[in-house]
Image (cartoon, rainbow, N blue to C red; front, side):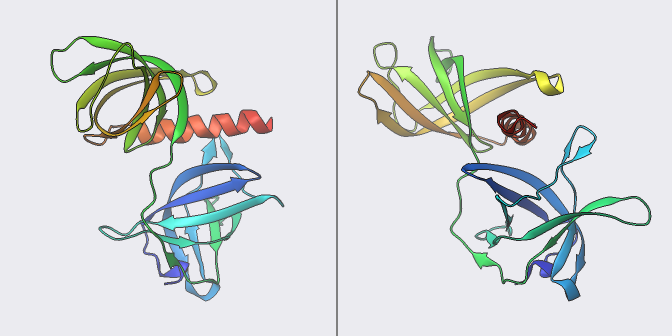
Length: 221
């Protein structure tokens, strides 16, 4: 399929590569322009400013996730900011290439490194840990093996609180996960990879804003 074969209202993911950095934004198809092999998409904003993806070292891929099927990616698309006669602003995303079906990707993860308290099972004692990273589908924790030992398929629970000062917003998430992976480190620490039991409301938005702020601070713009 071509990018102009996407339907209005389809959710898409913009995967941006800036040098060695990667960041993802969620958008939506607002209209299609078949003759130009293009779509009009919802813009991403930083405050009141529309985020632009122009630059010699910026590359953009667009991912479309069909329901119950593998993602389709449109590589190295062209993205420009467009304002219509009614002053509505869109991204014009154009690609002459056919979309390629790819293997299912893991959800985009961000590094956290926050101190948390983890409870295993129900009504069990809690242990200190570090929330290593988090995505919309799972999270990773680091635990001292001398403090606690968890097993594969065990259910754990933690509360993660954070404040993003740049947008003056506080977040609090209840995370219930099943341990899927265990990796022992040489320093006596153990990394546990966990899958979330269910979708956590607001987590996608938090991850997007957090990564956007991190990238903006790193680029000094």
